[in-house]
Length: 222
Ligand SMILES: [Zn+2]
Ligand SMILES: [Zn+2]
Image (cartoon, rainbow, N blue to C red; front, side, top):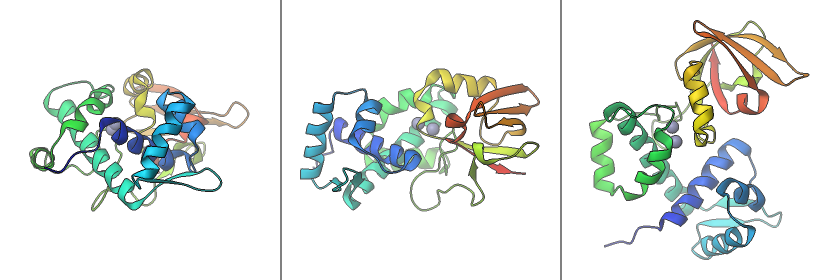
C-alpha cells in the first residue's frame, strides 16, 4: 500500500498553500508565526520538505510548493472542504467552528472515502465559507474583489471568507452573528481610510471590519 504523507507534512503543505494564496510571497518567519512553532522546528521541517521535493526555497528565501507539493496540498484542501460541508450540513455542527474539526479529520480520509463523500454531498464546488475546492470546477466568480476595494454606497454580496480567517473561531462567530456569509448582501455604509475601517450594513444591522480582515473576504458588486 502506498504510504500516506504524515500529518505534519500535510499540515505544512496546507499552511503554505493557504498563506501563499492570501498573503503572497511567503517566508519562514510568517510560517513559523502561523504554525505557532519555533524557528528551528520550522527550519528542520522545511529542510525535510525540500529533501522530499515538496517545496523549493528561493535565493530570497521565498518558500514555494513544487508541482508534487502543490498536488498534495490541493488534495488535502479538497478533503478539508468536503469534511467541512459534512460536519456543517449533515452533523449540524455550527458553521463557525467546522474548520477546526475538519482540520483534524481531513488527514484520515482515503481516496475512496473522499470520492464517496463528495458524491454524498452532491459534489459541492466550495466549502461552507465559500472558498472553492481546488481543481476542475472550483473558482471564485471573475468579478470577485476583496472587501476593502469597494466604495461607500456599493451593494455587495459576500462570496467567500478567506481560509486564513477560518482559524479564528471568535472571528467566525462574529461573521456568523453579523451575517457576513457567502450569498448575503450588505451595503458599504462607511469606508474610512484614516482608521482603515469599513462599516457594512445589512438587514440584521451593521458590522465594522478593519482593512486587514476585509482584504481576506471576497465579494462581488450587485
Ligand atoms: Zn477551513
Ligand atoms: Zn471553509
